[in-house]
Length: 151
Length: 107
Image 1 (cartoon, each protein chain N blue to C red):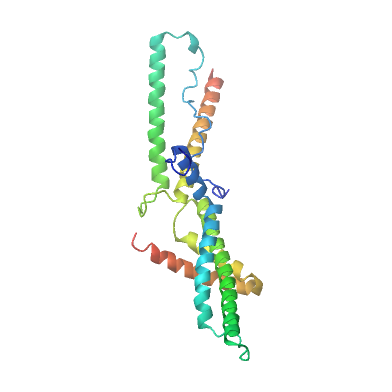
Image 2 (cartoon, rainbow over the protein chains, first blue to last red; image 1 turned 60 degrees about the vertical axis):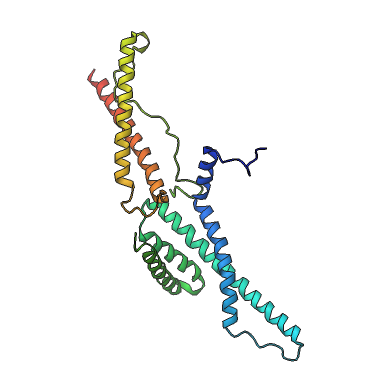
């Protein structure tokens, strides 16, 4: 019995799959999902480190534990959402810049970092956006340089 | 303009491979004898081979990075190859059109 789950993919199917996975939209979405997962774990760790709002000490132990866990969960989810948005914006913009320039060097990362930093700091006005752009661009340039140092 | 937002970066179908290097050729082709037809086919085959070799070398030199960190083509290289091939054929087409016009004027 031959169905898509048991037979080998044909050349056309593989080409179509490659076309989908190489597209910018797919890359952005996939990075968003991966960012969500990483953000969940990061948020869990972060909520353990930072001091949360004071717990009601008159409630029973089980109630206190439930409150703390719910707070950890909320922090974790909000951190996951932020990470997902940041990763999706970075990945999508880097892919679009690279498709436009048709070159593969470090300036793609710098541009994508600037766009991401600027977008995330949009609420703080033009100065905040410039600072966010510069900071995130420097950060992503450093990471990209380190990753491709030995090529 | 972005070329790769919804699934670009792979081969586009070649729109019309121009065999336009010979403006005087398409005039009496139905009546040629088999020898001439064979010679014409051989010549066309040579032209195609030459065009393919030139195109490959040109786009390779222009688009492929010298830094081989991965065996797959990056998105930039795929987009560059698409554009290189399309531009080559367009240049070919326009040059042959101009040649045809010139030869018509001279006649």
